[in-house]
Amino acid sequence: MTKFNEVTNATKTVWAGEKDYLVHGATQVPVVHSVSFGYDDIDEWFEVAIGNKEGHIYGRNTNPTVQSFEDKVKILEGAESATSFSTGMAAISNSLATFLKPGDRVVTIKDTYGGTNKIFSEFLPRLNIDVVLCETANHEEMEKEVAKGCDILYLESPTNPTVKITDIKRMATAAKKVGALVFVDNTFATPMNQNPLSLGADLVIHSATKFLGGHADALGGVVCGKEDLVEKIYHYREINGATLDPMAAYLLLRGMKTLDLRNERQCASAMKIANYLKQHEAVEDVFYPGLETHPNHEIAKKQMKNFGGMLSFSLKEGLDGVREFLPRLQYANRAANLGSVETVVGPARTTSHVECTPEERKALGIPEGLVRYSVGIEDVNDLITDLEHALSYVPVKN
Image 1 (cartoon, rainbow, N blue to C red):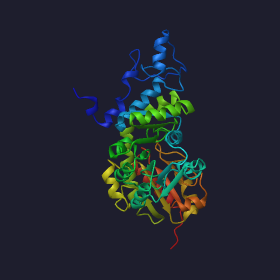
Image 2 (cartoon, rainbow, N blue to C red):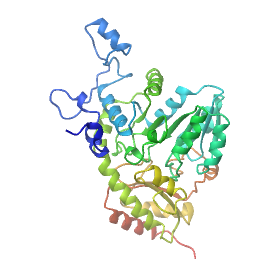
Image 3 (cartoon, rainbow, N blue to C red):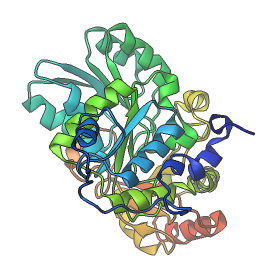
Image 4 (tube, helix red, strand yellow):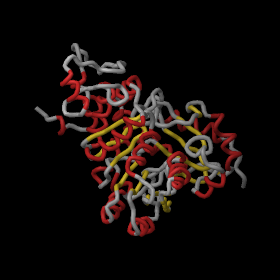
């Protein structure tokens, strides 16, 4: 009989992390809404409470439905342990807060998600934590900054929204030389396309709200990696309270059963759409790591199994072009989300970097005419026809 650890991720998305939580012959993990878990034996209660025995005490700490979701992500990422959060940003902020203290130094990239960038540019400096923002594609610059001293190296690859790529293995090697922890936001890639732990990362972070759940109906975040590190993050989260709700955990679990199918369709469609857009006269530039014209295409080929369902593109007419283009799309939600079964579209100024000023976005290399396009599972030919129709309303100056 095939051992579970020998099957592919496609099978793991369906079966991983669920068997231990099935009860009464059910074939689906139940939603356990109980806030507390009772014990008749006070000594057993104590053993569970201090972690010497498996079990649950209080919903802010652990929950069976939530734990099943964590186990599934852990297995897909090849991690020792995982812990979850109420949102992706809670996963990021709690993980950073667990390990950083005044006087520490963080090296990261300029192109992180807007909310993450705010943590680095605004919140951490208030705590006397030194943050260095490097050009995302400049590995030499990052290596030099890491070598000067670094407690955490924080990466996001591909980035949101310009899908830039960082060589994770190369940068993890540099970080290990100075004893730094390596965090990688793997939200855009998903475990189906990239496994940062195998490339040297210590911790992998997901906004589970996006591709993992895939249906835009549940908020959540998750961090996985080495057990001793995850245990520290779990302890910080259980005290500070950014707990994943069991109903959200159930919806994320259910969504993940189709992750492999969705990802396969979205990756294939994204490639076709990117190739279509780069030929269009109204489009200034297309950003997708699967394109040979992408500056880090070779790195993406090396560390990714596929290139993901996210792309972005800029219009020659800038923001005015976006205003003409977006309302004409029929098969796309104009919303601040991504990774769902429906195509989702929007400019960075109202989605990934709404927290930033126009000047800050410009400094980050994000034009006001940039459109973030999250490819859904619709027929790709219908999506291209939809794009063609909407782009026909964008004036093109000779």
